[in-house]
Image (tube, rainbow, N blue to C red; front, side, top):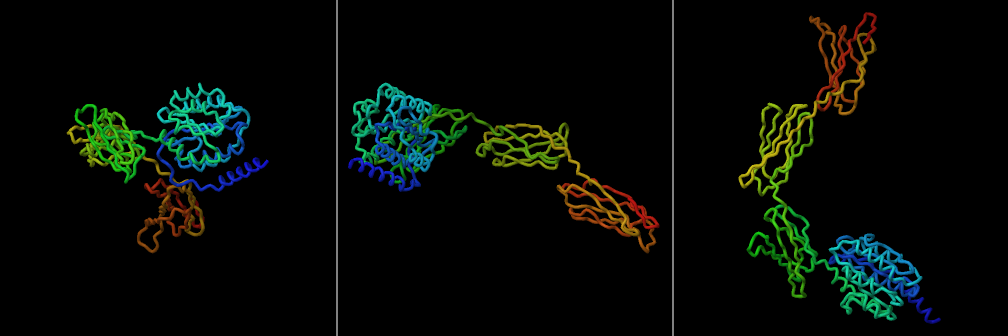
Amino acid sequence: MKSFLLRLVLLWVIVRRSSTQMPVPATVLNCCEGDLLLLLDSSGSVLNYEFSRLLLFAAELLRPFSLGRGHVRVGLLQVGTKPNLEFGLDVHNNQESLQRALQRVRQLQGDTNTDLALRVAQRLLMDTEDTIPKILLWLTDGVQPGDVDELMSALKQQGVYVLAVSTVHGNFQVLQRAVTPPLESHLYSVDLDNIEIITEDLREAIIEIIRAERLRVVHLTSHSAVLQWRPVLSTDSGYYELHYSSALKTDSGMRKILPGNSSWVELINLEPDTSYMASLHPESNQRLFNTLSVSFITLPDVLSPAEVSLSDSGPRQIRVSWGPLQPAQVRRYTVEYGAIPSGPVNTRMFHSQQNSTLLTGLEPGTQYLVTVSALHASGKERAISVKACTQEAAALPALADLQLSSVGLQEVRVAWQAHQEGLKGFWLSWEKERLHSIYTKPSISSVYLPPTSRGMNLAHLAPSSRVCVSPVYSSGRGDGICCTAETQTDSRQSG
């Protein structure tokens, strides 16, 4: 009974400790890339206390790693009567999410059918990217694990590293056959009350397997390549020595020395459509590192302009763009354009770093031939021609209605309706009677009104006066409406 009570107290301490854990560090290990699948014994042979202890151990073991694609992907598969995939490799991409998920895991109980779980593990790990390391970490009490030799052997033959942590009452012979050598760093048999003493050693063993010692080409053109790697040095711990050469040259190639905090380099002035080999060696007085290598073929040379595009087309303008920009190879660009079939040809020149221009002053509804040419430093010229059409000139909307109504002797109320969109104002004009003048012809009066205006009173109109209202838009004056105001002797007026 005392032993049982002691285990309950220890279990409470573990749960209490996990709920008051230190927050996930802001800086995590960005050293590694690989898939890590936890195979957790969740059967009835594992006590609740032991199960919670293994979960806490796994949480602390994984806490420093950067998670997600391109880093470390973690999955959890439970062993019971039937296997249970608690979460897959693509579920958690940050530590906060992973740690919460581990705290929510509940024990399955039941039989220890490890072989069924291993079949699921094999499928999960074989469906991932072949070029990255894969680890199966088996957390178990080792009691009656079943016939796992053949399945573990198949996993190892497919490139999966098998590591194991077992309680002291485990079947050590089965575990020895299961793990990937060397046993001293890949197999741990430990008392669960002191399991934290193996955390650092096991983590280092995992890092050794999934340390991302890969040199990758992340950007490639006809004359350049960007190489990237995960840093294994720091500013004070050493430097990188880079060698690269083409397969066409017999010399030793180029050599660069890069600082220890480097993680990428751009190789320039490469030959187009050429095979290259690059090797990167980390130099450090603290430990030995492997030399990383990569081969690549630069893209075929593309002389600018390789493409010409049109945009911002309007009645009197078209934007012309071209590419790719090659300021180191092109001296200048020339744009020629003229109306088809026999319009005058206009020519404009641009410096090597410009890749677009707006052609203005064009005729509406007209087809143009546009030619973009480049004069290269080698003396070669390259040109591309495209046909472009300007838009038809849009008819400016007219007034919707115009009405005249009498409001007094020789006075008329003018009212109208118009579309508000793009409206800038109105021009109102009318024939006004000349008073006390020797001239008999009426004078013309006009006024500009704001766009909110919809009417105005006109006085002293000439007989049969013409009243006109025209809308004004940003692009010009629209069609107006005119009406005739008849002035009667009885003061009645009609329009």
